[in-house]
Amino acid sequence: MDKGKFATRAVHAGQHPDPATGAVSVPIYASSTFVFKNAEQGAARFQGKEPGYIYSRLGNPTVRALEESIADLEGGEDCRVTASGMAAISTAAMAVCKSGDHILAGDALYGGTHKVFTDILKGYGVQCTLVDTSDPTAIEAAIKPNTKVIYIETPSNPMMKLTDMKAVAKIAKKKNITTMADNTFMSPYLQRPIEHGIDVVLHSITKSLSGHSDVLGGAIVGSNAFLKAMDPMYKNMGANLGPFEAWLTLRGIKTLHVRMQRQTESAEKIAKWLEDHPKVEWVKYPGLKSHPQHALAKRQMDGFGSMMSFELKGGVEAGRRVMNNVSLCSLAVSLGAVESLISHPATMTHAVVPKEDRIKAGITDGLVRFSVGIEDVDDIIADLEQALAKA
Image (tube, rainbow, N blue to C red; front, top):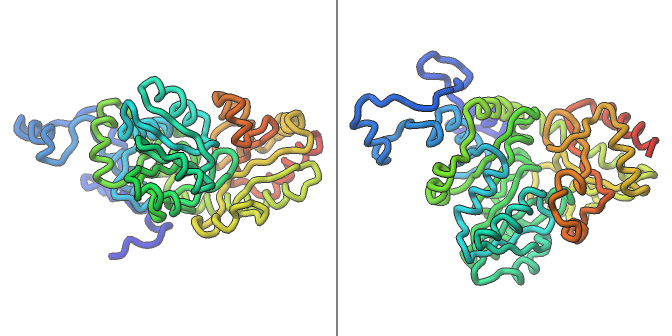
């Protein structure tokens, strides 16, 4: 039987009635260890000769259901879930790179990713070069003989800059370089990088996949060969996700398509409204015709998502007044949740990025990042309107 379209798979992929009780919801297997029938079975499982569970750091039935669900939705062969989005990024990168290797990454990265790539991994002998990945020629020019990974965010956080994934994949495959894409902003409902030739897809499942501001987790999606090679790093460094967080994310994924469709429709309306507002200097949202990569967005996305950034004509002080005066929208970091969230990247999510790097990437002190929730769109606009009146 055909697995069905995305909405059907979001509800059912990886999730089966419990064989012991018939429970519709995947049980939370809150067990650290699993009993063997005999010593021979225990030995066979540790040797990889027999499938089955051993210890929850090495595998858990609830966690496995989530991995199967995300792999299906992203179109990957398999998935590993982790304790956070940063655990996913760090594990994937460290599984590929060793001392003397080189990472090529986008110049407008999330602050935590920037810190790991440019500072922490440097201490282990891994170099990193940041480039404007919206320009394929810049990527090709920056490749070194020791480049092992090309890492992209598309759209980038928070500049909403897009990368042509097919172009990047074509460049990388000629030189046997692993490509990795952070798909957190879009979710597999709106964008599936593997379909465009990307090797590894990363997520903070804290965001749209779980969707309710109550889970911390990450995901790594790729080929069986990549994940098998990564498993010693993943399992022995202890980056695994717990069963309760996995269960909450499975529940969130069931409504992913419903939430993202609502958020996208609202975001398009809000972005157009902000663009026409007299106090707004500019708005970056892929769904706007003014976005320099609007045509690319239409080619590689199924929708434009819930994220945008904007700057006020009054600069950083005006932005601060807006953020201090919203009432419906929450002044908080994170994104992709049912609640609308507003934040200031320069002093919050990207505070660890050196100012010179931030400004070079376009992350100005006055930039405001906005994640559109599922509230009534007119109520969101009314809240922004009253806050803008005080800017």
